[in-house]
Amino acid sequence: MYPVTYSRIRATVLIMLVGAVRFAFAINPAEPGNLQVHVAVSPSPDYVKKWTATPPSSPVTIQRLRELEVGRVAYVAFIVTGYTLTKKAETDLEVDCKIFNPDGSLLFELPKYAKWHAPASTRAFVMANPALDLKIDPGDQLGRYRIVAVVHDRVSGQEASGEYSFEVKERLTTG
Image (tube, rainbow, N blue to C red):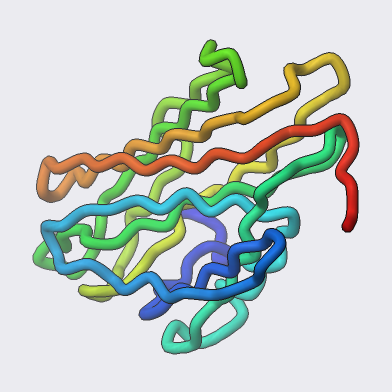
């Protein structure tokens, strides 16, 4: 059984984009059969904690990471919607993850990294378990990293992909 810390189902997800301008938008849950995976990358694990500590009807704001300083950690989660339920109202999802260096080469691949096999609601979101802590070390490439997730719905046989990119810099400047 997966830890309870990632076992909440959500009806709404808010994503906070961070940059020169701050704004939020809601991602609406998809209809069953319209499988989607959203890659959430944040400078803080707080959204994972809030996901599990608040009622599923409450929106969760995810501060999205645009830039990461070498040596800092990015917190990556795979949020899935549009999945199909079994007759017992359960999902059976697996997420493969690939992370690409700025030069396009594969940094690493994690087949079947995150999973969700548990009861769920229709037209909602689940966060596959576990989330991923990603640290770029000194000596790693600087530039735009890309995270690609592929979710496999074992109930319907569907798969879908999503991706997110962020910039890694030696030092972040404030301004």
